[in-house]
Length: 217
Image (cartoon, rainbow, N blue to C red; front, top):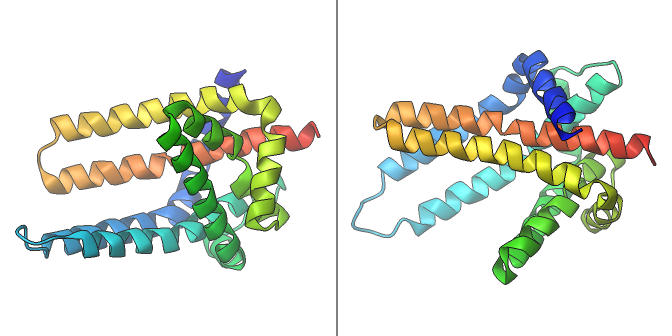
């Protein structure tokens, strides 16, 4: 069953590659260029914590836009009325605050679990995997979205976990190969950007299982 849903996620990614790229790549490319520019301007002999914090905050601010737009677009395809990238992004603005705080609370819960032991962190991450979709598509507040995800994901834990592990393993292997085999910084940055974009498969796969959960409610 996991293999079939993974196949469907890859098929969606391939079929809607152009729109997904139009939604996500402008943000990913801009953030990558800003990050490279900031890091190149830093004196190696001084602390770069300020620049890293600035980059992290900028990425955090942009994430709800392209992430929310991706979710809205996937739902529009399911409804048979695909949105344009601009329309999807404009809709994402309406859920920016909710999704931002949902992401932060989700990340804190996972981080706490990882500090205790790795397994609780992984468990929390999987059980809260529906939170973003619930927040964006059902308009629930962050805590409500997290609670709903925890409740609704119980029966789909192993299905989510196995699919996520396959995708994460592939992305991790790709990133390791890039680090080991590519020495030219511009090429390495370009390939890393490709890996970051392909990671949208995680969102697509999670959404596919979320749709399964809704159909079986």
